[in-house]
Amino acid sequence: MQQDQRSNPVVALDTSIDTLGLDELDAFAQQGLITSVYAQLPSGKEATVYCCRAHPATKRKFLAAKVYREHAARGYRRRTAYFEGRERAMKTRTLRAIQRGSAFGHDALAGVWIGAEYDALRRLSSVGADVPHPLAQCGRAVLMEYLGNGAGPAPHLHAVDDRHRATALYRRVLWNVEMLLSEHLVHGDLSPYNILVWDQRPWIIDLPQAVDVRFNHSAFELLRRDVESVCTFFATRGVPTDPGRVTNELWTRYERAEL
Image (cartoon, rainbow, N blue to C red; front, side, top):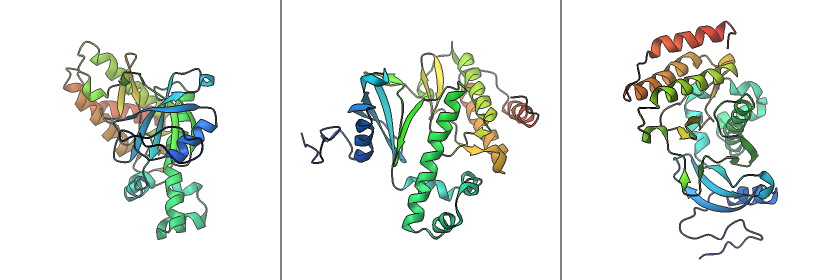
C-alpha cells in the first residue's frame, strides 16, 4: 500500500482510492468530523464522492465527502441559464475576473458552485426536505450525510424497480420539488440519476446548479424540464402522470405564495 507523505494523513492510499481532495479530507479530519476514508463511491464527471468513517462526536457511522474536480466550474459557467442571478452577490472585480477567465476568476467561480450546493443543502435540510444534511464545506469539498451503509451507497432511482411503491415515491419526489420552490429554488437538472432511494424515501442530490426563482428568467423552463423528467420515469413504472398540469399548478401556487 502506498503511504501518503503528508503529516497526519486521513488515509493510506492504494490504487482503489483516488487522490482528489486529500487536503480537504484532512481538513475535515482535523475538524473532528471524519477519521478515515472507507471507500470511493461511483461518481460523476464533475466530482468524486468518498464514503468516510465519521468521528464518534458526529453520532454517525459514515459521512459522504463530495470533492469537485477542477473543470466542474467551467462546465457550469458555460450553461448560462444556471449562472443568471449568481452575479448579484459578486463584487465587480470578481465578476470581471470570471468573465476574463483568469486564474483568480476560475477559483472564484469554483467557490460559487460549491458554495451554492452547500447553501442549498443547508436551506433545504432545515425545512425538512429529503436532501443529505450538510456538515461542513472546505475548499472544493462538501461533507454531508451519507445515504447507505457499509455494504454500499443507496441506489439511484433509475435502478429501483418497485412498482408497489412507485406511486408513493412519485408523490414524495414532487413534494420535494415543492419544498425546493418554497425556498425559491429549482433543481434544474433533476432526473432518476440524481435521486437516491433510502429508507423507502427519495433523496434529492447534486444541487450546485439549483437556481433562485427570484433572479433567474429560466426558472420556469427548468422547473418544467425537471417535472417532465420525473414524470417520464414514473410513467414507465405504471404511474399516471401529467407533467404540464403539475408544472403549471406548482408555478401558480408559488406565484400566489401558497407553498
